[in-house]
Image (cartoon, rainbow, N blue to C red; front, side):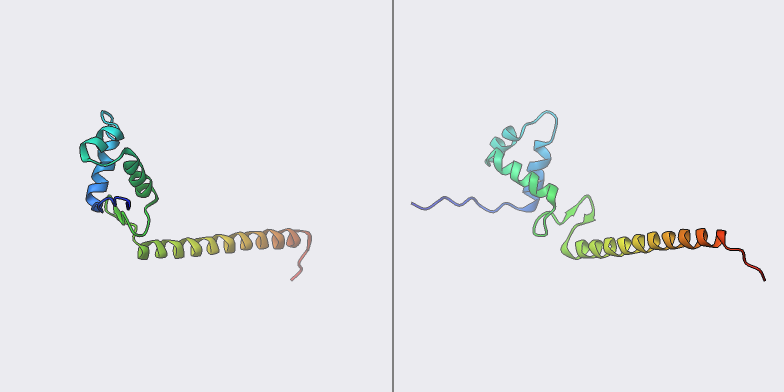
Length: 108
């Protein structure tokens, strides 16, 4: 016999299951029993929710974690790193030139 395939759950259902399992007076096992899913499934959803994959949970508390936003964020981080590296280079360069200019006497 083939395996029984679990039905696909909506994103809202999964979010609500994770939210309920995180309440202080409830456990994942209690929520799972009430909703008719396994506690492991809720744990999986929680892990997916925390990772914010491209396919699921694209928005959280009004913040867009979609692929487009992620790509833009990565591009901004690359630019930020490039600018920090450039700044560090210029600082080192300035230190070198200021040291050498102190020992020199310039006459105009």
